[in-house]
Image (tube, rainbow, N blue to C red; front, side, top):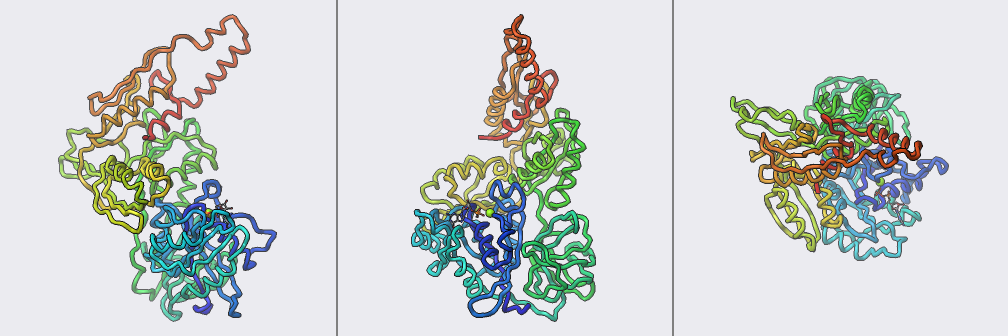
Length: 597
Ligand code: GDP
Ligand code: MG
């Protein structure tokens, strides 16, 4: 395809502002999909995506558009994930395109993720076309929102397109703007192949499918290519494009976006951001800035029913095939039996994987407290990584501990600034910067990642009513006074509940934990002490008093069927319990106890 007839773009938006609906409309208006095959949200394929309205994996579609100037253009839309956990993937896929549609709900205005996402687009040097969506709503206020885009984001919004993705109004204008306002890609045809690996996923028929953007040269069926990050060679057996269903073609040239298959077995062998070139006489220079995404949050996943361990292994193996940033190894816990220690990009990533195991594979799980990776510096001068608080070595051998820190950037309307500063301060943050952008404050904090992985994002959303945008990057490790807090139920340590905490916050966390557990653990026939301890020292304690009577006692001599029902109920309840010594702890106790508030 002639480079001048190609436009590559993504859509950036806050959640629910209409990104998927707009994409559907663009596909529909251009006749890419026949009317009868049209279903809502074509690009959001996974169940969880549909339900939560978040896009997790980048998706793409190639649209042919016959423009008003009489020419036919190829428009490639790449849909990017919209969450901070996947920030690395967002920033990479943005580099595969030249422009973005910035979609803002004209009845709501600029919101948290609008900012976080548009900054990725600005960083990737995109030309940006503002689109004011939902103009069919009575509350739509295009002038106000256009002004806000100019004030807060600092881009010209005078030419913003007014659209209703619902009624179809403004869709034609949007397609024309894509052609007229967005730049054509550049690239050299007779150069060695240089292609960016934008995304990859597993397909049960074709194996691993690799989404690529060709920078220079030509990718042809049958050729041998090299992945530059790990120097692996592959024989390209298929090339195609998404319309949005797959269509096989013979080659892709500069500026084009499509996919290849090459009998690759695992997604792990493909790295987002990698450069693909010819096997011989390839490009001398890889695309810059490549770094594989590293898991930063670890937790244990255990089956509630220990008989399901093999099923869990199977589910995890399958999910890992399709997700290079998800890591796992087997783990045994005295309390929870056999399970896996898993690594994730962040909390949402963790939740998504856990949900998929529970939903798609029907395995009920116990999830232990999320933990970051600590560096343990031993007395003998060696350093160990700690992924699991349960593996904390004897303190007599430990010299000091280091924890990962992040640089967090938060944008927030002025009226919530005080609450945000307090939240960051409470989480052991060090303020680095505070500036203003219009009526918004931008604060930069140096924070321990440990304090962010639990529920920082949720808290931030709640104290700012969803009006803050948050983004972070890792900045390295720093020493601090960190200790392992253990939890004992009936004098037995429950390793799944142990966690690393800052010494100054240990009492508070310990107190909160034992108080919660006291409410969550059902009463037994005997008194149960619940304690939090550091080393051998108890820092918080509650006692669960004994139950007075057998639950069936009041039915004594009475209705036998009622008595049986009660016993059945107890039995059913048991299935979801875990026994610790003589004490049964319900599954919900683990989940709730590990949430902070
Ligand atoms: P996304 O999260 O940005 O992908 O947003 P969706 O495309 O899923 O849209 C969120 C909600 O807004 C859905 O219920 C859509 O039906 C609705 N919606 C999208 N565009 C419009 C519009 O132009 N007008 C109205 N009234 N609703 C819209
Ligand atoms: Mg969507």
